[in-house]
Image (cartoon, rainbow, N blue to C red; front, side):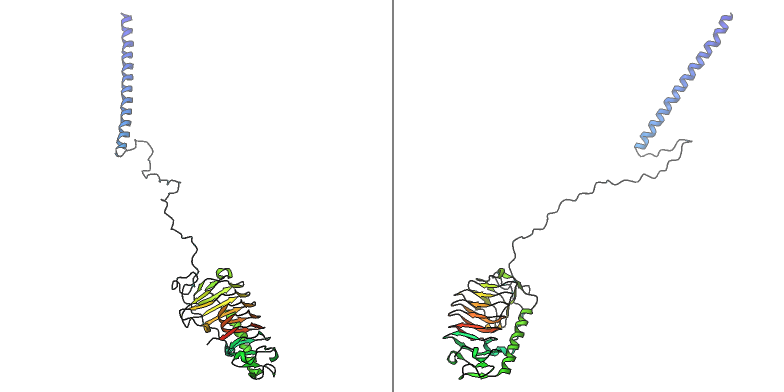
Length: 323
């Protein structure tokens, strides 16, 4: 009887312990299920409330971080660039002529020759001549004596001006003051032509202009200029050409400077810091303003003026003063 009574409490305790374990397992299972439901609800946009006693979480979403990789724009096609050399044209009015060096009309003013405009040939140190030349216009030399003028009266249609009693008597006019003024104006004209700024063309053809058609304008070279073939100056009767040449000007034999479109020799000015040479049989147009000498080889001719600060040499040439 005592053994039975002792066994009952032990069994009862075992039952209670088993029940407690069962309740604990069920509670744990309910907790896990609640957690899963919270996660599922959050995944579907349902608000999740913090558990009692848990810390409050700031509902403000975290700042979004932009990617560090820079955005890449779709490449755009670069503009097409014409790499062919542009035609040499004046800056003043492009597109009026079709030749390589002609591109428009320039507003260049003519060179004021002053009293020098009355002379076909004006020189500072005399004239040599191989007979017979033909000069249409006045001839003068100063400050050199008149004896340095090698022309004869039959060769000159005009007057020969001398600073003294030297020179050919029949057609000689002695007027030192007029010659001094004319030579002074000649030098001023040279300075004017050489000092013009904003050229329309710079170093055209590297100094070789043979075979070209040239529009009106101001041309500048830092070297000499060579005319190895015919050159055409195309423009109207009031258009002006000024050629600034830092070296010599050389025109080859049997070549011609031609005028077209009404261009006038009186509006063409060749300013040369070096010697000027017209080859045998060559023909030039315009006033030549030379810092040094002007030499015309046999049979060469010009329609313009020869204004040289040193000498002029002639060999059976024709010089006609431009009007």
